[in-house]
Image 1: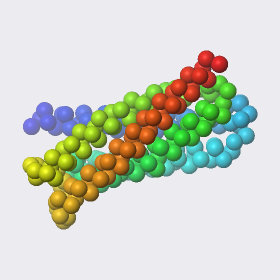
Image 2 (image 1 turned 90 degrees about the vertical axis):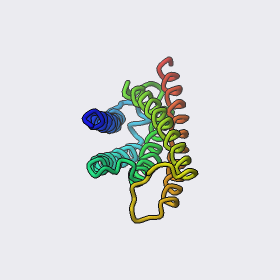
Image 3 (image 1 turned 60 degrees about the vertical axis):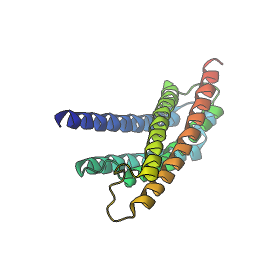
Length: 199
């Protein structure tokens, strides 16, 4: 149906837009950290390197995620287990280290480096809330599918369907755990930045 096609295209467009905004914020944050005149950050070259490394890693995962998402949609496999695994990797190996680095920067500085810090923290809170709601919904769907076998949840054709659904549910749980930790870290970061703002 045309309406279904339009809805699918809109979802992909919004998802890609979120990925690009996240990527831009990561690189802008790195640029602001490198450019700051605050001595505690200016002399922390290892911190600069770590932020750069995870910004590069984030760029790579962003490009791969977009390519795989487009491919899966094109092939009619939007619910591919590969997408869940990629989301898990992105959460634990990209988003979580980056929020920790942002917290380190906030703790080490006596005042705000840039408004980008606040925007990044606010974006992280909004994104994680959306992801948590999405993952809780997916977890519920997978649980129902395993219990009742009521729908075709996974499109992997060469694996045992029940075990694949159970494995996917495990990945979703790990991702959900990571997102909850990210939310707590993002809230802490925002509080720390607000304290810096009022100093």
